[in-house]
Length: 110
Image 1 (cartoon, rainbow, N blue to C red):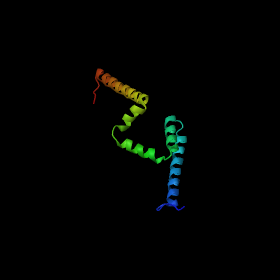
Image 2 (cartoon, one colour):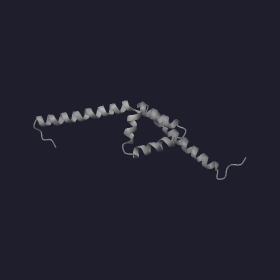
Image 3 (cartoon, rainbow, N blue to C red):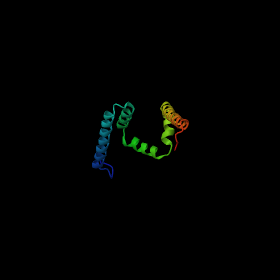
Image 4 (cartoon, one colour):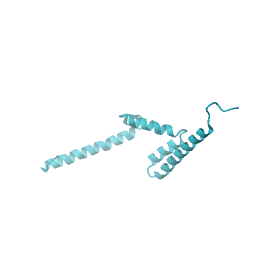
């Protein structure tokens, strides 16, 4: 049986080498960031994907789309988004407290 027209074994080998290199890099990153279990698991999941380029390229598009990351997080990880919103709310209230304390003590507020 002959290979289809335009088929090159060198091209396939080059793609496999790139994929293996990317997977190795992702696996090394997962090991390096073991102190951050969520990040380590995310890198490992990408490395284990059949085509690890695909989720990375999709991530690029998600980051390029204004607001999409936040919307996806709200759907896929609602508890995480609530925790982030709570932390941000606490920071805002702390800022207001400092502002009011400065006003109370007659300090000039910029």
